[in-house]
Amino acid sequence: MSLILESIKKALVEGEASVNLKEASALTGSGSGVGGRVIYDDAFASLRMANPLRQVARQIATIGSDEAFVVKTGNSQDATNPWGYAINTNEGTPNQATAFWQLPVRVVNAVLPVRTAILSDIDNLEPTLEMDLALEFAQVEAQSMMFNNDQAGSTTTVYGGTSGLRGLNSYPGSTSAASFGTNGSGITNGRHTVLQVAQAANTAVVYDDLTNLMGALPAQYLFQESTAWVMHPTTINALRKQKASTGGSPVFVEVGDDDGGAVIYIFGHRVIPNPYMDVTGAGKYPVYLADWSRFLTIADREAMNIKRFDQTAPGFVYLFAEKRVCSTIRDVFAGVRLVGPA
Image (tube, rainbow, N blue to C red; front, side, top):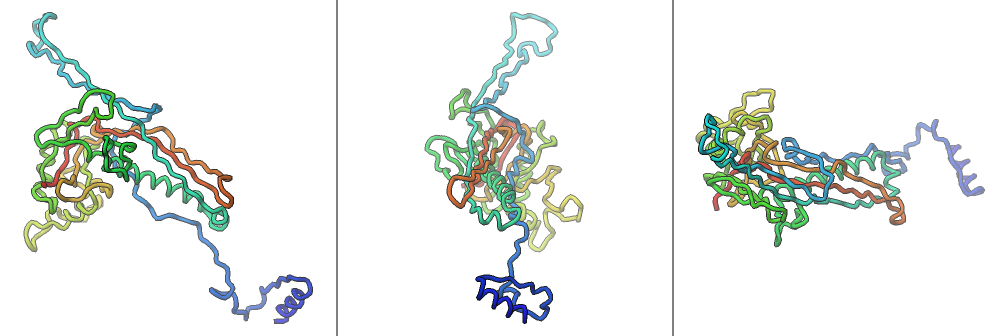
């Protein structure tokens, strides 16, 4: 107590004073709300889910402003003599036709202002902001890659609209056959028609929907390394609850394996949870099944740029982030999707 009194006297005379209370064990005026200091732990951000399609899609690097894709559409076999025993170069019509389509490499960017005082007060905040910003970009990319319509008159502006990616759901569909889109370099070219299977009811995905969908995928794409189901976590949870009959056993039985349990695999194929896609409903696409390394291609600029600007505004630093990406259905025959009836 005498140390405190002496310090008070010194402060009255000199204007300030400090006191070492190391030995003042009986002093209780330094706790929470009564003079104590707040010490910050290292900053962190709640984990966001990155783009699930990147787990299985084909990914390539690009350096251009546009990326063109080429498919051989013709049948090179000599239809008049497929066995080739009699050689006559004047007969037969082998067809080696190709088609191409071209998509622009799109830009996603963001500017994040941060007060310099916060950066000095909270440890690890700047790298945490950078990591979280990168995952926010992954979310934007995933939503655009699934939902966006890049055609004129697009209403999906929240996912990029005419400046966004060509979303999987924006491709036209048919319950009879898949086909490649028109040939050319225009933005309307390359809009392939995806083979789709009508869902039994738009209230829930059922076992028979999945068997029908697997039966629709051409045999050459079955059991490839990247063949996988992609569906919303809500759809996965509903499938786990599905019963063969009221009060009966689950359709997908949990046996306690270390692979994670029921609906981690279906019919031998992995199930990829994707929260950035449809759940069941009229006209919705709740399930895709594809050999993804052939079905979907993502073309990336090799680096994502994150820069810090220190003198943009007093008291602030600005984090600027930018990435460039393009995506397309490449082999339209390598994937099928479920569609809810209207």
